[in-house]
Image 1 (cartoon, rainbow over the protein chains, first blue to last red):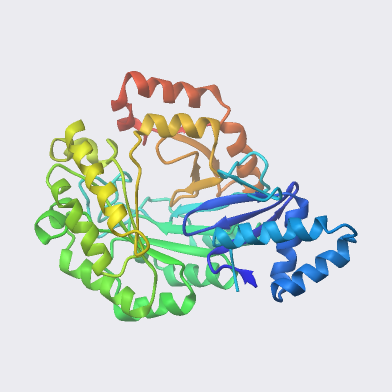
Image 2 (image 1 turned 180 degrees about the vertical axis):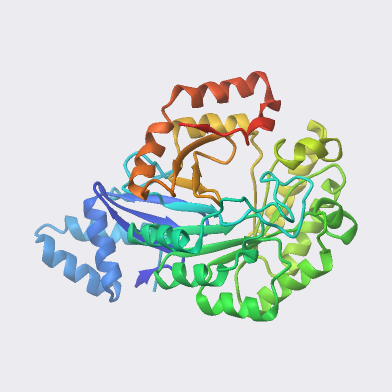
Length: 83
Length: 321
């Protein structure tokens, strides 16, 4: 999984922004979502990204996994990431 | 929507740097279009356009601040003597770049070079579906040469965006122009209302459309957007300038308009200058840009437009904030 071809990512004080340059749409991300996108940038498939994030955030009750899955589904549906 | 991301218009206030730089790299142009808002044309380069040292200094600042998206326009940007060096600088530093050109210099070699350098898209104005209308709007232009340029872009694999400016003599071709854009390989088609400013002020009697003509124009576009759904994005800005500016007062886009001499405009449709790359750094200009949107003179100018829409004829009488 990776950011889509026309998507740019930049860190900001509040988290980060994703800029889809074809539609010129901007998405602001909070720090948690920023961490997810950084892992997407680091590479690997969804399972590998999920494993790293669960490890990092000590996902004891599965909440992190659900949130990350929802975010990735959202990013995919908006065409911001691709496999 | 997950709880992690928020969809929003680019809010300038909280960002460390602009997200988009629209840089008019020269005012020189081989065309002299009836509606050109920049009043570009042959011999119309500014006397004080940035020299190469300053151009690459500014580009370096933009890349160091991770500005993700730039466009080069003009005038005709391909007439800039360092055009391809500038393109290479931006693309190799990882930003995405759109070129806005009249299409006359889109030779197979130039298109191949753009593809090789990784240009994100090339936007070409196609103000007619035939030489009769195109050449009337785009004075000194040649429809066939522009169409050939678009074919060269498509053959090279460079993504194409088409722009269209309506006038009384080309508005009835809108459906045909959308079809032509698709046939030429465009992925995006954009249009809106032609602005009463720049060269258009003098040519307005040839350009002006009635409300009824605009209604029919947008009806055709709605149908074409549906027809090409999934194949080519047909989008258009139906709102008038006043509505757009009132929205921007509340939500300034994270966009700097850079003129060929390094002056920075608040937005193209207002006369306000909020920076000067000859004298200021990007950080200073960005801070002033954000302050300038709150300057009462900006809101006042927008409200004055409500009373006198013809005030757009004064957009080149720059006001420094």
